[in-house]
Image (tube, rainbow, N blue to C red; front, side):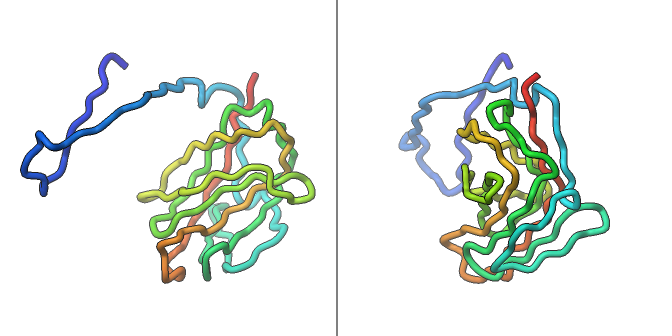
Length: 168
């Protein structure tokens, strides 16, 4: 990257001289996709527990979730435990256009280890998540957690895969 540009873009703003912003830092992380990817289609994960939602396994291996309310969650077991001290990041490919989600990491007893909040997409996108744990995880959770959503029947999610980028 040679240049970074910032542009004010507000059709309602009449006086751009009043427009002010502060940039504290910019991080370029080129190593997020480094390492060996360990990928699991959602059909490879075992359902451990679910509440506040309905789910369906799609023929393409993805998982369809329809939430009934805030904190609805599905907990899924991984085929093999993942040592997060050896993981650069986690990539989740999903579509969730209404309502924020949280993606959680669980240990073998399904105690919550770490969580990333505020996940929402426009169309199907890959979200790269950085967790701060060095523990061994055995499962993930996908939870609805939008404080501003009143009709959770609109909160539907399709999850294609979860990928762990392992250090070499």
